[in-house]
Length: 597
Image 1: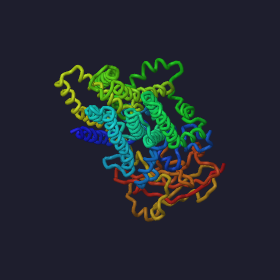
Image 2: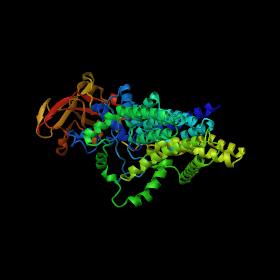
Image 3: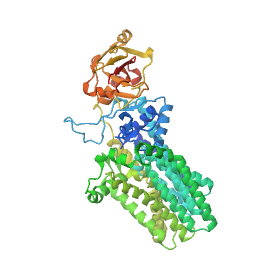
Image 4: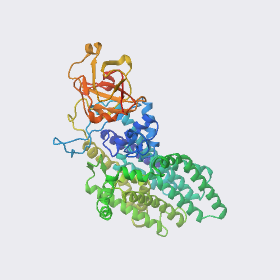
């Protein structure tokens, strides 16, 4: 019977998160363009990108920078592996911000323009992007399994707490949305849940043997290689070990100390190389100063910290914690936000009350054991909140998704609190009614996902030109010689240029014979000897060429490194209104030139 609750939770998670995956257009989630760009650079250069604004100091090209360069690389390495497995090694994001006719940023629910490659039949490139999103769904499913096991470990005599908590978590709209998009917090949350489970077992038996210490060090190290919000695991582990050491004899304390040292050593061995890299490039382990310089525009204004923390911070945090979809253009109604906040607050206070109240239904052993288990969950929530608050003392980032590692423990704490209240003050009939309400959680969740998120993030038809694509392939990859349908005319191969030339090309005879007619538009791609993209005319600058020649602007000539050989090619932009794809696009062979210093 109990397995049905877990199965229902997993089914709800896959359905609701999968719906958010399909409903959310490409890049219409916070930081998705940056996440995707990180993957491209990881594949292109073979190493993580740099924090924005730090390339010059590191004596590297600015092309090595990324808006997400401050993040560790593990999540992106997984996405890169998926991309390679699909045979698409060089997908590039080309987001274009929407605008009103007067040129001002668009005020609709969507932030970016969207191309014909997104539907109704998505392109292969967008299909790979969605597969990478689906990895988030897998992470969420594993996290639910771990949180369920955590609940069974903490409350072995009250299995309904774990069952109800994972079902409510799987039906929580913000959980579903975050797990339907690209976000490195999803993988970090999975590693955190695994660490919570191992720490809960140490809390229960007071032991940290070799296997458990190695396992704990491994998952904590991997979590730190995924997202730095996982730093909460280190003080949490030390608190658990300290508590266990206070409740045992000297011999077991020595064993705990050995296990703790082994745990910390494993963490350093697993994640230390990344932090040493930070120290070499930025002069500090966490690259905090470089991060602050890169996002200086988003810092809390000097002298405005108190007004920010008492004003915008709590309002936006609560909204993004309960229901904010896309880039915030679609939000949960205020009444629903108040209901969720009220239920969460009651559960939190009830859980704390259960931790200190004598006796009670949640007592699996002694009162100390019950108190330790509940305070363990509260400590996770407190540490996650403290990290978020510390971050917002510098940056204006009241984002509820930064608390994702605490979602599962918070759900367990709340359900435990509600259970304690029910056992103490309510009749069995009332408790059965509350249980029925919990079992019906998928109903309001479905209303939010399919009635609010799905239509709210729908793409308007006819807003973009037929040649625009949100995700582009093969910018820096030459076409096979037998596929080249365009011939380059000028500049000559290996020309040495003092000034920007006029690039010229023509259709080969066989291409003219097969021409589908209509107005052809072209883009120019430039890349170096290793295939690193230097410029893409239409994809990066939005300039399409209707003729068979293009005079390169003088003001952008500096994009090409002086003295180095530059490769260039021409591609006809595929007309997706006529069903053409990148695979159908005519391309030229590759020409080369050298820009003089």
